[in-house]
Image (cartoon, rainbow, N blue to C red; front, side, top):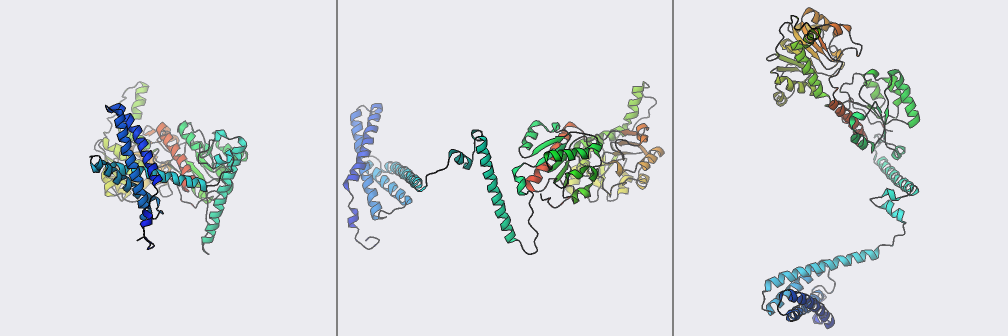
Length: 544
């Protein structure tokens, strides 16, 4: 019975012509294949061609007859594409296997090979049928060549005229504006009674231009490739160095000529501009969103004033850490071995000039004030000279970190100072650490101890240090930083108990390049993700 309950005998009568046509197509292909194969491999090419043609005629006819019956009886000529594939696989497999048996060949190879042919043929036909239906349903495009190019994903801009490019760009920007407006409307619908208005980093007027970034000083140390890649996203320009008294007017002139600055990067050689306060930075307000410095310290910035203006202030975290630790290690060895006096004696022609034997660092105890990134680098380097390392932090580091760097924690600063043969200052300058090493701290230190400061000058009370040096409490000091720079206390210029450097700890070629790139990446991160990598103070987003 059929699906509707009607007799199905009438459906088994298949028109003969399509069957013979399928057989003829198969037979013709068989004749051609058999002829070629016979010429190449058989002794009797004609017989080979005829026999192959008969085989494929029988296969084509029987395949079509079986397939037609399956589609009519099983699927009532209303088969899906997948059902047609099933029908073709079954028909071709059975036909191929049966004909193989009739010709005294094995059934299974004929079944498998012909089933695969049936699948490939029907699958390919289905795909062609789908494509033809899709083409017929799509309306013919009436767009011009330029319009089609503007809608495409890949746009060969060089092939567009200036007018075509301008029109395309305006249309794209307009569509972005519309999407943003729709999103804003939706956000307003979702906003509760007590919610604040949603904030955006850009206004719609800023979409037509790249964020403008101004670098104070050269960018050559960053490398041409890095700068070229940065300029793909940002409009970068350089403000040449000038005296501090001219910086404010230079900024005002630049902004008047080129428009507001979105990001201000402070490059190397910035010491002459200290301090960076409202006096010199006020022209950046209100457009600037970030001030990025390549220094790790930030005591030279008016941090609170910058934050109140809605500007991010960033420093660098690791760029100059190891070179600074190198300088601390150099100064430690210099104070242990009294290198400055020895060099002066040699240059003066007095040779050793009755110089006393110096101190061997091996086996001595080094106390580090502030075991941050710089302090950790220093601890590793000190271990190579067989120095025992102890440290003082506001909070103790984990046991794993202490084990990794071979350090011992002292909760009391005074107890650590009392146990140290040499002390290295590695902490940042804050209100809490200003004057951290003063009269009381020098008093608890060992007689003849050594002091090294590569952090910031005001952490050590200079008056107390001079008194400790003169009294012999401190045998020698190695200083890379001072309370006032560059016009520091004349005592340190003349004393043979002090080894000095002009704040050079982080000034190596690799460190300056890393620090510069880190400051640029802070700017990039803000405009990409809404937050810089290393902010000094967290602030609310400065909405344009």
